[in-house]
Length: 245
Length: 296
Image (tube, rainbow over all chains, first blue to last red; front, side):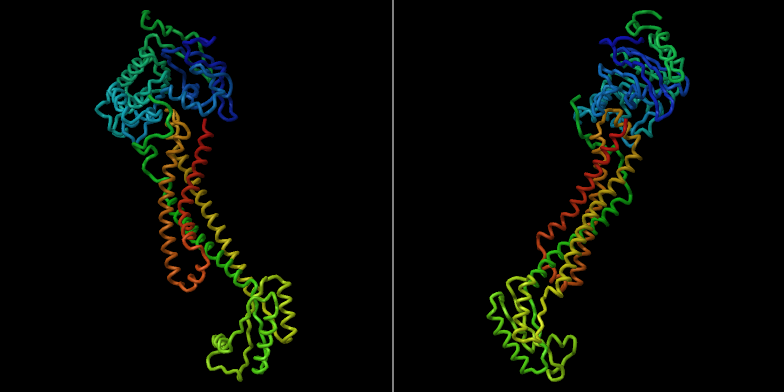
């Protein structure tokens, strides 16, 4: 992770990005970093450091008040609003509180991004079923979220986030509402997805979890600034599966 | 994955099965019913006023107040002869004394004789134009033959009635238009409340790549369902109420309806519910798209 020129392997680049809510002080200041394609990143920092705000910029729920954000090779600051949905379809998002649609079945929740993208009904069963099998919920595809445990709901949320094969997966405290065993299982799902080429950014407080992903890089936020934008690079993503830690 | 789609298939109701707003169909129903009744009033009164104006234009009644029946009859004959020579006079018709007596019976009772109370002789005259100059010429001609005769242009006493009917008709049309507009406002308020209540759902839809048009269509389905229910209910109520009024006042309504447009008027009245639906949906769509456009 480093600032510099955008290369073909970069998926996201922030240059001196600042974010301010209303007329208050800046929540994020002078954020500069680059995410490479296929990288696995943890975003760490104390509560109130600005992790969720940074993730919102990443999954395009907010736009910065200053600086430049380049994603998939395009400047998102000046991008017309009507082009944002196309970019959002290339990003998967997982939340701590799952944000499933309560009156839809697990199948319909997972199928939502595909339906929005215009996939025909007859073509939904295979990818959605495959995704639910992948997260271990093939038998519960007709269950509504309220009948699922916290871990099961989070797995449905992960399936929804990745069913459209996003290039970037952003997860905000995805293990915050599940037990440690389930947290490890969820992390394994993220790793599996990362192995298929998806860049993954996970915001978490859990140092134990970070240590379970060899080669992952860490961005540490403190008071709205990246505390160590280059020092946290432990292993370059390309060497994750070739070099011993 | 295929390309962009504007419509999320309605496999499951994404915004839930609840109605947009519990009271909205009822408010729409009341407004639709009132708009239809106002439209009906406009469509009956305005043509009736026009027809009345046409009837009274160029018509006058000559009144001869003469207690002596023989002199009165001679005056009538003299005026008929005189008016027949006037080029601008189209028709002259003197009211028979029996008919005048029958008219007076309504006010004075039966058994009235000419010796008890001499009734005036009445002559209806149609002239080619109803302008002041023609009426003045008619008055001069009448006075030259029978100085005590009085010319009463029909427009003088029926004109205000026709104008009032016309004004009421236009006011009714304006009320119908305002009620239809109010239905749109109600739909916009309801959809704004729904947008606020469904904000978490909208965020999810946006995050998974939904366009504003796709989200707006979800809300439009809700609006359409409630507005259509209200409009149909209101239309049924208005038709029932109209039939009841027609039945209760059939003589008066039949007279007024003669000047109305018949089937065309019925079609206009029946167009009110679809108009309410269309206007409400258009307004709510604009409101949703605008509100979504304000989101990041």
